[in-house]
Length: 181
Image (cartoon, rainbow, N blue to C red; front, top):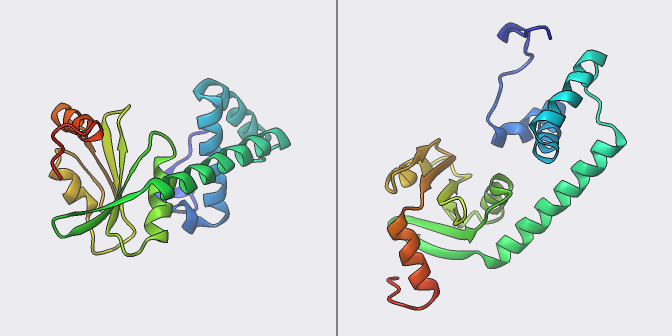
């Protein structure tokens, strides 16, 4: 493989949440990311290498079907999580809270756009033991919110660990034992 220098890249490499702003480059990046997720690292590398050798970044019919199925799962996840979302007030912020273990970015970013009345979305991942925060507002810094919980990140996307005490209190709240609102 030929090593590509920074000067040869026709655009600045964005964070994944910025792919929508890149037109065709963003669409290709998103599709390749989906294929990496679905195929796994080894199979993806083999296929991507074959694409690079051919000189074309072509998505074949099988890959297109996989991408379409993935996007349908994402869309269903967003719709389901929107129905389940609860709104809370934390200090000066109004936050939409959902429980999600998959499709974190698309759920968080889509719900932020659909609910401009919210300052951010908190995505609680009990299996992973963390909370991800997303915002679409320029005047909200979710890394500051995440920092209050021992986390960090970027202004628009951040995360924090769901500590053991928080997880235990969450379970107590779910089962109605000493829930502190």
